[in-house]
Image 1 (tube, rainbow, N blue to C red):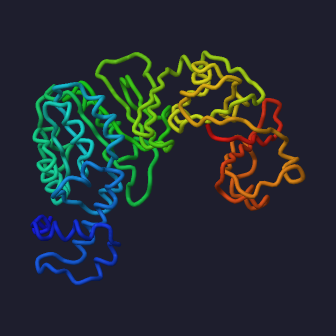
Image 2: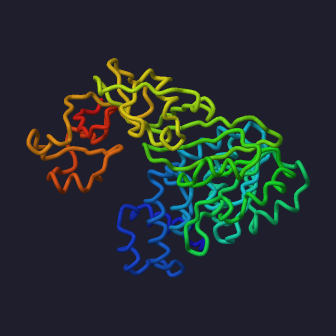
Amino acid sequence: MNKRLLDSDVQSYLLAHRQEQPATIALRKSPFPTVAPGELAAQVDGWQRCVSKLPTWAFSEHIYYPQKINLEQCSSEHTALIKQQIIRKGAKVIDLTGGFGVDSCYMAQHAASVIHCEWNEALSAIVAHNASVLGVHNLSCITGDGIAYLQQQADDSLDYIYIDPSRRVSNSKVFLLEDCEPNIVQLQALFFSKSERIITKVSPLLDITQALRSLKHVSNVYVVSLDNDCKELLFIQKRGYEGEPLLSAIRLFKDKIQEFSFTVAEEKALRSEYRTPQTYLYEPDGSIIKAGAFKSIAKEYQLGKLHLHSHLYTSDELVSDFPGKVFEIKEIFPFGDLKRKKTFSKANITTRNFPLKVEEIRKKYKIQDGGQLHLFFTTDLEDTLIVVVCERQ
């Protein structure tokens, strides 16, 4: 961490040049003898990455930006807000894998104190500086191994343990909790000796069912999406909890939060109602799909499903608050009629339970991306391949 980057003249320079290409700044001679061109470029690059992902950081003065990988791996402010809401007021929290500290800073707004553990000394110093700039004064930064630090703490001294284990081991991605670093499955006994609750953040690529087999006392599972892109899974463990976990699909969009909760038992007990496409078509948000609320969502909003495996829904009456995309159906016809019946020069294409990929359809039928129309290539309840022509509501 080069503290000269925080000098007023350097900060003024960065403010004046923050819209430029970082590569251009890196190739230009630095006007400051104690700051290298690459350091200036890294700060501009960091600001540009944070404008939409971390606006509080981006539009606060004297923020110090870390290496690109730290910004790529950190939570967005939108998803950090979910962790903040999970934490009860006045709690004592430890973040064992602190990183750039976004989650820690947000949890600190509800907690009495948060301990941020980060083995990278430079990154730990950056987090401590930024927390001070942001006015987060109940955040303590510990440089070193978070697990080793936790082992030194007294039993029951914490209310929450938060951990985001690495899914990249020896430069390869892993998809089982047991293969992540640290191995949180093996560490559960240690965690529960120090805290009543554990919050584990993992990739949405992780299989929820498999994770529930590995983790004990899971009370809640949150599937968090941002603008229909599934971002993370949160597993909440509570010491001694033996009931069925509540699954919650959290949809973040247009600065709004929409939540849909259910249990696996409730989902299994339901029977789907299948319908031919009616007046409106519904495409569930990514969080709903990942959580597996295929029948529960249909019951909640009184919708019919097009096919067992299509995960598209329909109704005659408009359901405007459906957690996902809503379309008005303009036309439906068999897929086999596409070439002779219709020519679409431009359209948005989605495939659900369909043998061809979007790219194959575009190439074969010369349909460019974009426009007002949405074409759904799917299978109906009679196993017929169909095209549903829609407009977004």
